[in-house]
Structure formats: structure tokens, C-alpha cells
Amino acid sequence: MRIDTHQHYWRIDRGDYGWITPEHSVLYRDFMPSDLEPLLNQHNFNGSIIVQAAPTIDETNYILALADQTSSVLGVVGWLDLFDPDHRKYYDQFRRSSKFKGFRIMIQDMPDASRILDPQFIDRLRGYAAEDVPVDLLLVSEQMETVLQLLQKVPNLRSVINHIAKPSIKSREFESWARYLSDFAQFPGIYCKLSGMVTEADHKQWRLEEFTLYIRKVLEEFGPDRVMFGSDWPVCLLAAEYGQVMEILLHALPETWGESERDRLFGMNAKVFYKL
Image (cartoon, rainbow, N blue to C red; front, side):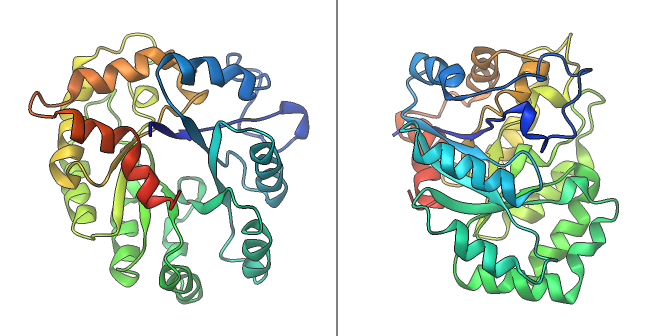
């Protein structure tokens, strides 16, 4: 089974997506299954995971409804606010859908990432960890130290780091990112998505070789059993087409990787992580 573990669908007129403005002209339109499915077929994917793109309960309900009507959607990662006293009510509502596979915490958008170390937040996250709920973590590299503290407090969390924690590939940021990435990999329940890399490089002048160091570091730390491919489509269109995103990853894979390792990267690990 081949799975794209990270893509988005949206309808602009819903009003959920304040971060998508007319200045992002390539993104400022609707993106629906009929747009992505030809690309999935072209690259021999059986389906994909929709990940929330707006911090609203309404958007999660929207993509769950869309998933229920779309056979190519294998799962949905929704949004949940653990600071909300009603978080459990919404979680129980979401999981009535068989395609709900977990939720994402958008640390990236927090002005103060240390909020995730609030005792009440940690206690609630521990509750989901005890139930083995998959959790996506969206963060930028400057927040890695804080997220490491969170993982130390919730060491049994089943979680996947989105977009390799967003190091600035454009400015060749590496050493600090690599050090924290190694720390993350010490937690057996933590996976890493090889996704969202091309938009961290120069959108107009990136080169294939720029990504190899980062991809190889992820593979070195997490091994073939805890990595997943995600296109981050359509956000990737800011810098690259779907096929180019595939090319970036394939170019960097070690020569020693055979069919078994590639099968895990391109689907089998996601099947395990998201309990498909």
C-alpha cells in the first residue's frame, strides 16, 4: 500500500484559511480530490491522509465529511485544542468517523511555544498518549527545544514530526536542528514526515542536492521504520510540482535502500502509525 501521508483540501469561501491570501496566488483557490487524484494515480499511490489546514472544529468536520465521500482519502488528521475544556467532547465527536485517525497540534502558530508545557496541557496530552492516539506535531526548528521538553514529559506519545521540523534549508541551517532531531528520535513512539521541505528552500532556485543532507539525517536517526512520505500538496506548489517533490526524496535515498525500505517509507509505516 502506497500512501501520501500529508496533503490538504480546502474551499476558500469557507473562510477558515486566514493564512491563504491573494498574495499566495497559486494557493488562493479551491483544491479538491479531483485535483489530486490524477497525481496520486500517476505516482501509484493508493490514497492519502488529509491533514487539517485551519485551527477550527468546523474545518475538521468539513474534511471528515469530504473523506467519507472520497475513496482515495484513507484517513483524516483533524485539529484539537487541548487548552479548550471541551476538547474531549470534540474528540469523541470526530472519532465517530471511521476515517478520523488523530489530530494535529499547531505549535508553529503559537507566539509562545512554552504554552505546551502548561501542566494542564501536558495532563490532557498524557490522556491521549495513554489511549495511543496518533498526534501530528507542526513546529519550526526554533521550537524544537520546547517540544523536546514536552516529549520528556509525555515519553509514551505516538507522534509524528511534520515537515522534518522545518529547518531553514534556504539559509543552510543544520547543526542545531540535527542535534535536536537526534534527541527526538530517542523516543520510540516518535516518527518523522519527509514532507514540506521544498518550501523551506529558495522557492525559485532550489536544487536537488540541497535536500540530501537533511533527508539522510532523518533516515539516519529514525531508520526505515519511523519515516513517512508526505507531499504537502498543494502547499508545495509555492515551490514545486508534485512530481518534483517526489524527485527530491528519491534523489536522496541511500543506494543501500531496497524495495522493503521504500515500501515502508511510502506507505507501510503510515499504515502502522495511523492504524489504517
